[in-house]
Amino acid sequence: MKGLIRGVACIAVALGVTACEDDPSLDFGGKPTQVQLSPEVYFVRSGASTNVRVRLVNDRNQSTPTSWVVSNVGAGLNVIFDSLFRPVQETSGDTLRPQAVQIQHQYIVEADIPTGAQRQFTLTSGAFSGTVTANVEPVVTGALSATAPALGEVVTITAPTTQSFTPSGSGITDVFFVTAGDTLHPIITALTSTSVSFIPLPGSAGPAFVTGITLNFAPTLAARRLETSNSISVPAVSSAPLVVAAGGVHAPRTVSAAGFKFLPNFSMTVGGVEAYVVSVAADSNSAQVIVPAGVTAEAPVVNNVVLDFLTAVPLSGLPSSIALTTATTPYDGSTNDPNALVINALDPLGTPVVVFDTPINFGPDDLGLGGNTKWYRLVIPSAGSRTVTVDWGNDASGNTADFDFVVCDDAITTCPIQRLTGAHPETGNANLAAGNYWIAVANFDNGPVGMLKITIE
Image (cartoon, rainbow, N blue to C red; front, side):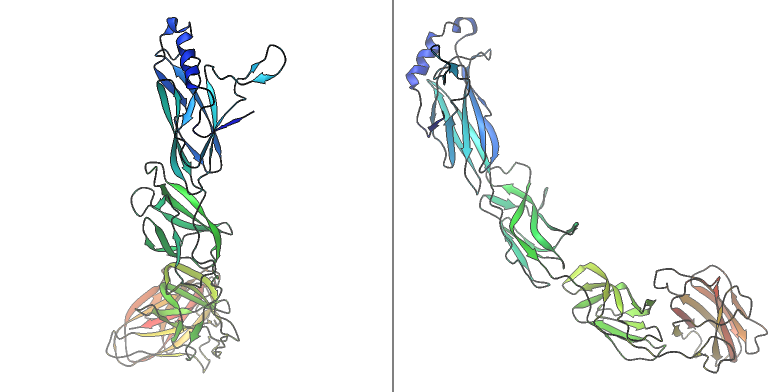
């Protein structure tokens, strides 16, 4: 029923000319003046087809019965006369037959250009002709240069023929992976019109989606998106190779991890208790941390670290590959305990001494400060103005308490510094004579307990 036409007329041109000249209806609307194509320009995906209708019309858009010749068919297009479009029933039976001459014809145009291209063909009736333009969208998508890259390995996607990436401006090219419902954007290291290179994020899996793709034969068309023909699988980061230097119960210890850097807001927990971060090195390669006391075979968990090749992506909740055990502190928090922690202030005045304590073994509320209390011995070497600051961290769940403190004389009869507010940290100042004192830190209302920091200067 369908006659295949590849630039060859199915009906003689002369027949179309005769039909145009002999049509008596021309006296009412005028002679034909142009070819009307629907559509005249269109987009179609390679492997699909489109119906194109053609009419010979006058200035009043009235059709003239005629026939058509197909020619100049571009490579990759098949133009097929649609013999089922408006067939006529024969008078001697119920057979339908196509009409060589009628007011409108339809052609089925198949496209088979996997890389995409712009192609044309011509429809002619006598002295009139029209050109149909088919923009064939590609089905070739490009591939990842590596499907199982190591962490930090650069992967490249090369733009398929007839397609280009957009390095700048509107519709700039972007790459992403959809993994377990999350959209993961890699770090793009190089982008040109012909290729894009990137470092995929840990845990990326599946095909890459690339936006900002333009068709070389239709550069003004809105940017499109492609999906790579293959998939990637990047190892996830499930642990950090943490190294914790030796140190005392209340002394800062250096922590580091090969291949990782520590962000300014780095934190660490051991056995569910938050460690106290003293500082992060200027080069971000290590940190000074006071680890909780009394921990047995616990793996530290680090937060806010980054891979040294992927510094834009913070990682948290990473357990270390070591089991840490720390010494216990025998101090029970009371004033009569001989193991009470001694803080020796320094001269000259204003020289800071910092002490960290965790876990905080509170004693009873001896002074009625509103919560369990822990006592520290304070030794002042010379008289002068001293500033005491008490700071504290969150507990393992991120909660925090309200700490207050007082500085009392050795007999605990007078307290020259009293800080009983809701401030965080609490800071007080007084002129203190040389001698021995007590610092009483109270956990107001016995809230969640974290690391404790005391500064004397």
